[in-house]
Length: 387
Image (tube, rainbow, N blue to C red; front, side, top):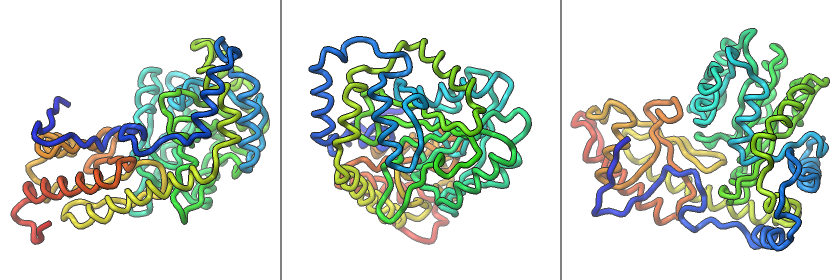
């Protein structure tokens, strides 16, 4: 899209999934101190093992086992961020001509990777009126003998939903019925709002093998550090060759960031629970501001998130008939009001936009006021209300 913001108004980017952009969300001192300490240790200047240093993998295994998992360092592979984790999981599980089933709306990397590898991407819908739960009947209809994996993103990017235990168990039942492994993208596992409980998939699975993807980036507010992991939760030894394939794939990048690997044990050990609690309260507060203000605008229907860093907002294009789609809506919004969200088309979900909730409260209020003005200007005359 070729878009130029209104030069008379400062740009408010509600599009960027980087929590550090506005400077209001920062890693806590314990996290920063761990990196400083690791950077001062010359042992972290060289390459690590291809699959990650033993110390980092052992620390992560210990951390996960305190949260109902049962893994060893040998089940973990350290990689260059969660995007690399997802890519490696897909490459290790699927061959050209097979298919992977992922959510719609869903994170764009699944489109990028599968297209490059000649793997078919099939998508099951998430239902906004059911707190973005998966359409399980549709999911089942997409599974066939060429299905290599089901992708579950929880908490969700772009929806901000957090699945219940019973819903995750329903997904696992389908996977078990058809002998399909799961790729669990759980990068936002610590970003869950008060009042909502998060469940990781692996501890719920008795028979379904799971490749769990995570990273330092979002949970510790440091996406630029590029440290992620794939955790192999095998069941019955069926992922033995997949595990070997993941190790071989590590040879492409040699190893992940060794300074952050060196810092990981202290980061996991010393980050206080208050850091997560404060972050979640801040995000929930900003999300509530956006939800309340946007709900008052006729033709917009925000869906209140329960976690992660995003909110999806529905657009009734019948009330904004001059715009053919969400792309056109966003283009005009940027050019007139300098507010930039991502159109739902970026997530294969038209008639919605995604906004981030990592923005300061005052900026979110200003952005919503500008959106209100824009909608009042462009709403069709037949509308019976005003904003």
